[in-house]
Image 1 (cartoon, helix red, strand yellow):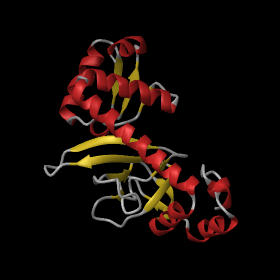
Image 2 (cartoon, rainbow, N blue to C red):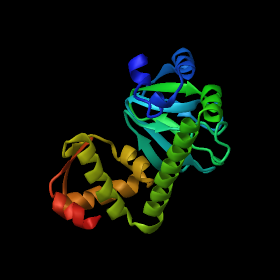
Image 3 (cartoon, rainbow, N blue to C red):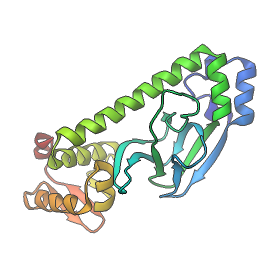
Image 4 (cartoon, one colour):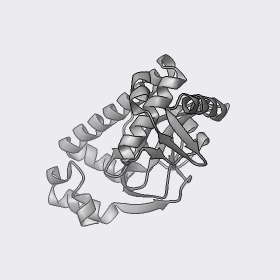
Length: 218
């Protein structure tokens, strides 16, 4: 726990008493793949620090449509699950574990107290919230102004870069969730990419064959 807490960007700016408070109150929670991490109907968690796995953050419409906003990976933090801490967060997001995931949680009451006591923590939280809202705006721009072919090409290339592999092991449904589209539309576009020689499709896997052409698409 001590080693994990020292990775927090504001750790060195805390007093000894504040550091001890975090040692006593922070805890690690494990989520199975697909499990809900946060939604408007659950507790106000506080600040999340992803230790392993992946968290997908999205909006859910009344009709059940999901719009992916961003994904969190090991070493990343998020406060959108702490609307009770930062009153300026006025919309509800949903969070689920994209794979088996471990998350360090600083409870809402603790991070709220630190925000009031420590200027460094307060500035960090608002900077972090601003960054996440920038991610949200980028996602909205992608959906509103980019066609499916461009969004899909960009996602495939980004995923290959993130994982260090040209073979992406995801279902059409999973990709559709990430780029906020319908599974059938993604399947048709991947088939088109395959016919053009850009990718090779196998069950549960997509291998990039012509990254230059995919780059030109995006």
